[in-house]
Amino acid sequence: MGKHFGELAKVRGIVTYKLSPFEQRAFAGVVSHGIPNTLRRIRSSIFRVVPPFIVGYLVYDYVETLHHKMSRKNPADYENDV
Image 1 (cartoon, rainbow, N blue to C red):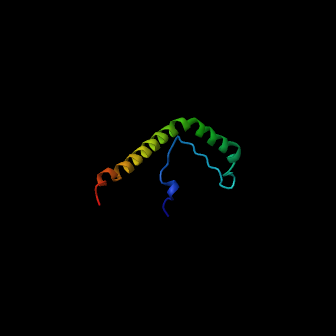
Image 2: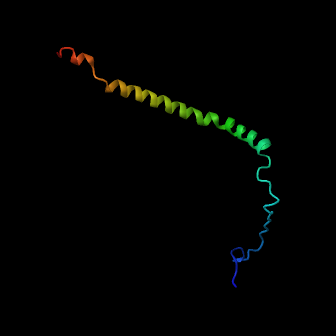
Image 3: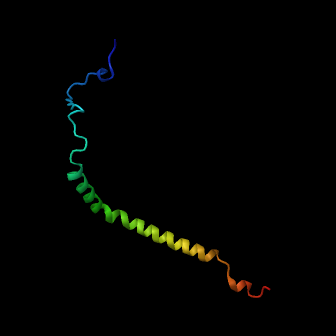
């Protein structure tokens, strides 16, 4: 009674292959290929990612220190108060 979702259109010229979920190995090569690949990718991009964070932290620290200094009261303004 009608077509199912996978049979709605007939596409010619495109070959599709399917593998049974029971034949797949979901974690094949995670330790032998995944961890070294992750380390390689981190090493290749660390010099592009880390310097902006360092500059951002230094600017943040400077602004916070300056704000703390500016928000303090000047003790010289209150020398003559009794």
